[in-house]
Length: 176
Image (cartoon, rainbow, N blue to C red; front, side):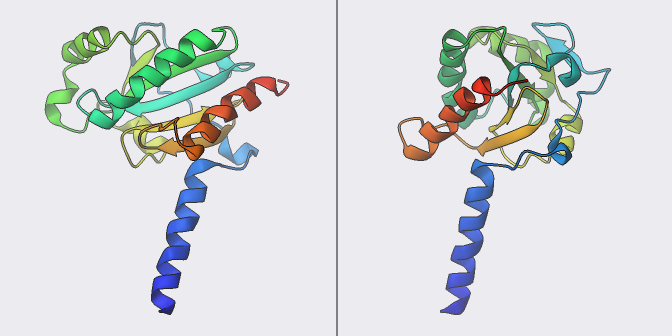
């Protein structure tokens, strides 16, 4: 019985850690590699994005769970002022075939994704962010500090998903 309680406690700890992170300087967003290839924008750096809230999402075009999040990102682009919020995609392939940049471009266009996307074929960005799953979404505050993250589909019709989305509004209200 005590083993079951221990397992349940571990699962609960992982769940709550996935929903929120403390804001301190040790959680500064890692910069993108200077030689990274970008689609739909010039190279981005977090130091240049100070004063904006950043949504960073790790995905691969073949992931159905990632695809289920696309409408959420599109709605956020419509809802929020681009001067205050930036969405950046990190395409980290799961399979060798997903490394084809022309195919990534075609899928980005097919899915009407209108934000900067960095190609992470060697998984360097994935590793720097200690990402574990597709999709994973990070919220970075105006000071460049990682404040929250979410692993999996954004079920905005459920309490946890609604709370995660509300955190964007909270971060936008904070001063720089």
